[in-house]
Image (cartoon, rainbow, N blue to C red; front, side, top):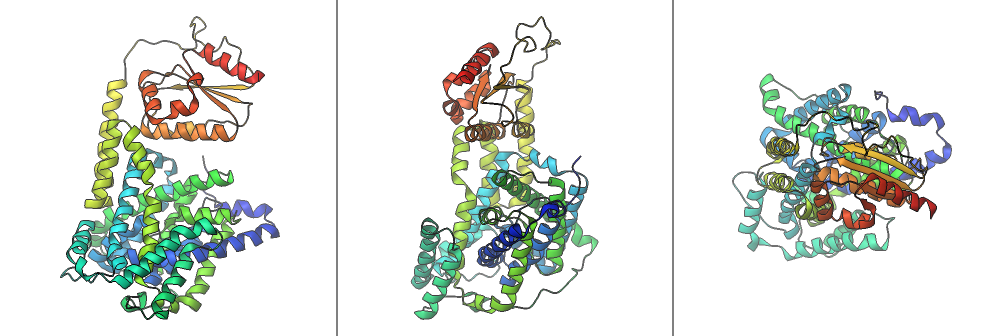
Amino acid sequence: MEKLKPMLWSVMKGYTKEQFVKDVIAGIIVAIIALPLSIALALASGVTPEMGIYTAITAGFVISFLGGSRVQIAGPTAAFATIVAGIAAQNGIEGLALATVMAGIILILMGVCRMGSLIKYIPYTITTGFTAGIAVTIFVGQIKDFLGLSVVTEEPLIETMDKLAADIRFINTINLQAVIVGAVCLAILIVWPKINDKIPPSLLAVIAGIVMVKGLNMQVNTIGDLYTISNKLPGLTVPSFSFKMVQILLPDALTIAILAAIESLLSCVVADGMINSRHRSNMELVAQGAGNITSALFGGIPATGAIARTAANIKNGGRTPIAGMVHAVTLLLILVVLMPYAALIPMPTIAAILFMVAYNMSEWRKFVYLVKTAPKSDIIVLVLTFVLTIVFDLVVAIEVNMVLASMLFMKRMSEETEVAGWKYIDDENDPDSINLRTVPKNIRVYEMSGPLFFGAADKIADIHTKDFNNCLILRMRSVNAIDATAMHALEMLWEKCQKQHVTLIFSHVNEQPMTAMKKSGLYDKVGAENFCVHIDDALARGAALGKE
């Protein structure tokens, strides 16, 4: 059973001065990247700019200190923006703080109860659908500031469709100067990464926006025009609570906790692949819980692992939690020294940054790919999650689609399950038995049994490809069905084999999995010659490869 031990305690045993220097440099660079993002995400969440910085400082430090990942960078993320905005509008900052503390407690309980592995039961179609939906809501929420619209309504606009309707209604108030500033900043964000990958494009966009508005005296709203900027250190504030408020906020707290768990563990998995490491999922959940509680008590908003910032940390040499802690300390210094200058940042610049955040998190290519290749039941869940996230909110989308995904899964399993008499597959009288066959040393054979679906797809990730020579055979005669999540896992396995120069061979693939593989394009990637009807053919194919 996985130990609840922070990764920091493990990595410090062999820590060197050289790695400390790399971690400090990576932490400072990530802090520079996180600064405009934290401000932009705070504004998208309907709270003041400094609350985004408070979150990155407090949650970022605690999650790195206690976390189960070597390189995770935590802070405010786009996934929470719409949820936070809704809670803050309906229940105020006090209600938001209480919901965040509750979510933190739930996350700690999830980690203590060893529930880190249960996140795999959230289908890939649901995570893809609501991620794309959140991206659309963020994009729509920034149209007003990008175009410089003067939107006047009797009540605050919370729902995405209401914001879009208001933008259309007040489109005649467009400010061309705001559009010019936004367009220039957006162009910088798109073009600059192709020129230089050292200097963060968001930092350049902020500088360009300030220079344009102040230097050319343009009539464009800045953060200082709409918000009071403070560079005060966050103070400890315990939110007042009552049983009634706990009841009201429980669904929101559960949503924050589930989303924080999913996003942070996904970020850990991505990071593991980049540094060839393995995170401690349960410890990471405990750290996420502690980080969110700390954030709420010190004036912040919900936080989780940020994939983009984590990747930037890795690319710049960060390999231990020290980098994440340095990132938080650097932001603290920036808060005290430079925060007043944040008032000069134009709102169209913030909108442009969030447009890019929305585009990057939408992963529209994956969305389109799933719509084209996934089974119809998975497509229904994907599209419905996407639509419900935009039209209603994430709480409704997750609740409805988890139930729908479970029902469709049970229907699929009932259609594919067959009741038959017992048969010992490895009996020596079975002509298909592998026990009586000689397997060459260059070959590893894995036998798969039962339906491959989202709850079992992680087993594919556990297949080893390093401790043998050049051939991996997957024997699938007992696999009758496969879904989009498992297909995604097989594609990841194929990519891993490609990197390690291992040939992937399939033996006895049944009708439904074969149809799914052809539809997804995996059949063409693997090659028709590597799909064998019988295990003897697969072994012969692998033996021939071993002689090459």
